[in-house]
Image (tube, rainbow, N blue to C red; front, side, top):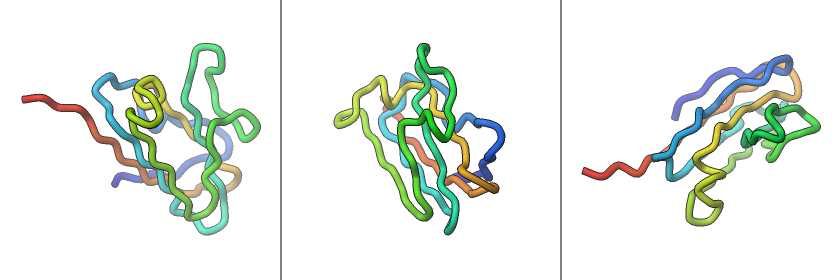
Length: 99
């Protein structure tokens, strides 16, 4: 899993749009602060602490896949913002690769 420090000031991209993506995993590595995640859609183009799809509390994780959550949700762009400070967000994705 890769990880990075999030910001409470500026939203950051976690995953760009990806048509080959099959699943996503997010993990809040912090023990005190929450991280807010949002699937970016044209009508709601930015994440905030009041406008988000998921709230990852300290130490919590979120797993999504295209069979249960839909291709659009998995393949769209995802962004994040922190509730405070700079908690670390770990993330992982799988892709549908045919050889």
